[in-house]
Length: 485
Image (cartoon, one colour):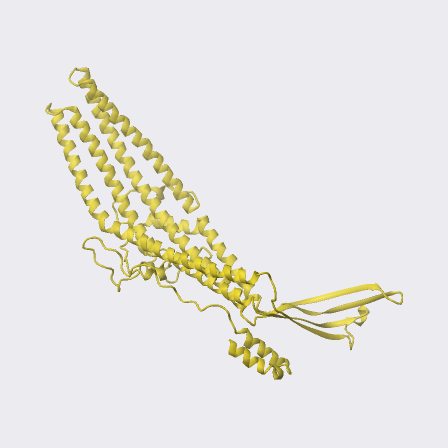
């Protein structure tokens, strides 16, 4: 830039002789920029995911999860319908789309600062004349508002910062969409699990009420003790507590889905039958470097870092002179009838240069603030990457262990069911006590509840992995974004 300034200065005499040469000089100087060259910081994470046991490292040739549209990931038709309704009716996603429009308008305002503003001006002035009477002056013409020639890239840096802010809002909307899809899927899975737990609790309550009637009958006949009766009463009350709890949890799931979709839901979409059917397609894990390209929140943080980097250019340019032009061209006359006569036309050109001399440290403080803002944006960008890495690592840990946990939990539930069957058979034949049966009932109910919860965690972990790897905002080829972003 210094070389450019020296060249233009040495030729200033020749350039000032013609307006075209002056315009060329302005364009040449406007190419200067104080903005630092942006370089993507290195990712502060490992190059491979952590592994558990004999788990294999990620395959570099695997397809990234972000390239898998959510329509390909979600297999269940009812859940697809719920997600589609959420994408069109959710208010958070709508506000994120409107934020894009606002940021786009701000960018257009900054871009307009680089071009002159022309206005049609008409004015009339009447005042007492020095020799008596009234003096009149009327003017009509075009007026160019003060136009700053961006010699040192101040306006260009502000425009670049506004562009990065605009792109950041686009990434923010994509991040909201990914979170929305995951929230709908998790709420739907929770509804399925609570429906299953509700049915399990109802069956358990019926079984325990039958056992209570049998124990009461034996107590009336003097065969069973009061302790046996109170134990049976306690188990029935426990089942009723669980039933009320599951009914409340199901209602909360329906309320959550209604809020997420932004509209009341028909009963057929809330039918959770077919809970054992596959809901999601397998998710490829890819590599940690994929997060930089696929995670919308990481890309949003990088755009904010680029905006902070561009703001430094504007803060640096504030130390240098600002040159502005004000011009007008039109007609002036002492009478309205003479406005458009020959000899009434004229023009003015008023260049102005302002060089900061003393500002009590304002410009330096502005530069210090911009530099600190870039460091803050850098820390936020690195934190976004580390958070994404941690979320993926957690999901991979879940995928490596939850499957084994669910199989073991299933084996335990089957063993407890067989144990209860044998204990009940022994009790009816007078071999075992009622306490043995009641204990087997309690253990069976707990193991069945744990089995449902483990399957819920296993399915929600699939959603977590898909979300953590940056999936959920890509659309299939040929499909447009209906949210307005």
